[in-house]
Image 1 (cartoon, rainbow, N blue to C red):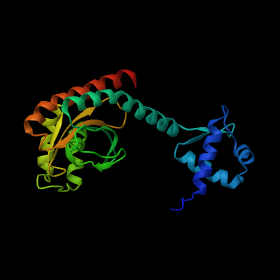
Image 2: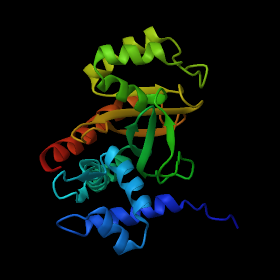
Image 3: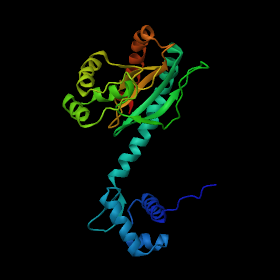
Image 4: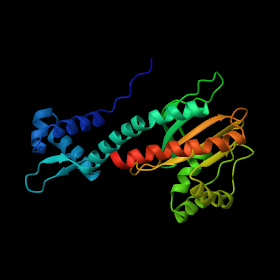
Amino acid sequence: MMKKYQAPIVKKAFTILDAISKTSQGLRISDISHQLGISKSTVHGITAALEEQGALKRDSITKRYVIGLTLVELGKMANTRIDLIKIARPHMEELMEQCQETIFLGIRNGNKIIIIDSVESKKDFKITSPIGTSMPLLAGSAGKVFLAQMKPEAAKKFLFSNTLTQFTSRTLTSPEAYFNQLEQIRKNGYATDEEEYMSGVCAIAAPINGYGNYPAALWVVGFKASLDRTKMENHSQLVKTAAKKISTILETTV
């Protein structure tokens, strides 16, 4: 059995945040030290670091610390993520029944795509991937959708300043060719991947709007044997419609 990694300073930081969050007036360094049994010097160092990151805010007159905007924003994003999964789930299930392929829901986080939910196909032979799996941003149909959501100038700069990894023989490795596809993706409202990320695997993705600062997308993935070009053309509108339904709900409720 692996030994748990111990980080006492992190535990103390969270203990301090918890104590401050439970007060309406905030706490001074001396209050925190007395209440938690942590030396004033340690409390001072931790609170100063947390204040610098925006996790805490100190009143210049009362010298009391209260929760900062950074934690408020993180809390909002956590709640929004839960709302996104809750809102998207029934539409993902419906889309899976229509396409009979696995459906993924993901967000962009920096240069990664994070899968936050999925509805697996009922087929015995299907594509699966655990929740929390990350993929390179410049990979597959979801990556194209995220790049297409960027302003053209920003997308072009990103493409020409990052190496396009060749995952398969069909992967787009030319920044010019990739960039030229983005305009068509914006017009169509969806992107496709024909064995560009994984050999023998095809996908269709559509953007989800209304999810704050984290771009989101919905995509269908299947083996080429079942998700051929004809089915991809038919399913593309289904994916686009499902993503639009989710976007509409997010934009009006979140």
